[in-house]
Length: 43
Image (cartoon, rainbow, N blue to C red; front, side, top):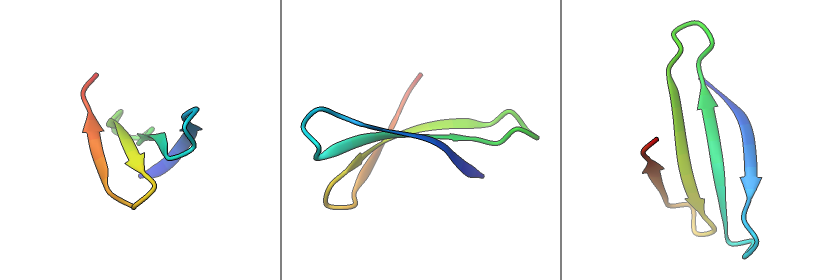
């Protein structure tokens, strides 16, 4: 799975990371924090 897009947020301490596997259609969105931790975002 490859990172398709990274969108930094205005506070510059967080960003959204979009993963997408073209072959399977599997997608995931993560909220990545500056400390390296992350949360999966439901969509």
